[in-house]
Length: 384
Image (tube, rainbow, N blue to C red):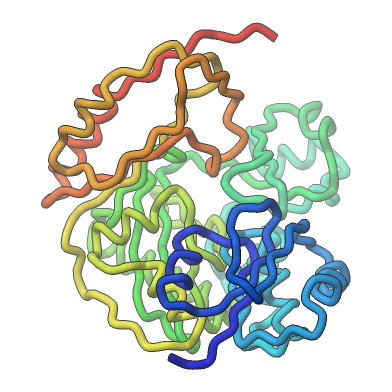
């Protein structure tokens, strides 16, 4: 084994498990305490700053004199801190501008527009000086997103000029609403070359992901070409990317790209569909190691992300029926009777998940439909 020493910013469990399995020494910078480190390593709990100067200050304060061979970002908010920190700790370098563009949706879309990447119309929140003109340019409703968020946190649908004025922060991007199915492309990149791709169908956005998607050959070819153009334009040298697209009748439209592993338990579904450990592959790409990827999937998998809505949990029915299904690979329910759930703040918030795998796409769909009927979580409204 090479003499690795890794700093993980924004850790993910799959990555931490793989580092421990390989006995690679690592320290952590995490927003809230989630994982321990070994003796002699350091764990720091601090905000993942978006200011390069604050990032540098945090690194100086938290890891004085430390040297790391690699800095790995596991979450969206860790991408820029990792790009900045690499220069301070002597690690494998990445392009800081790429980190900024992959973190900030406005910078990302402004930059990619210059490469002819097809996308919906957009503008900066700060440029919206005339609400009527914004709606004339973007249509109704207008989508307002936080520039540096993920998983739909803070997303708003604005249906009138009055809605646009309310809540204006200057830290958002405004976009034309796209009413179309969505998908994503997950890529493993090594030395600027895409080594492996998976296409995920958002069968029910925020709740059910099909891995791999079943697409017409021409559409698949178009999606992979778009993915390659975006990765090349951004100059992404290594790691894992997660590109989201709208599948409109006129062709795919770029949504955004993240320079980190996807959420929604897509990594779990990839492992069952393609029969390899995607966290081991992600770590290999970050370390610049060789990795043997499969050429074809071995199953049709899905991740079912559970969140029943807001209210008090009155009853949970059907868990035993779901567990009896032959295709179930993983099942975790993080709910108790009487628990009070708030409205879902983002797609990263869940109360459990199910991962299943079938021999055919038709069997996958049928199993998804059975699970939807079998697992019932009943809620009572909560006043106030």
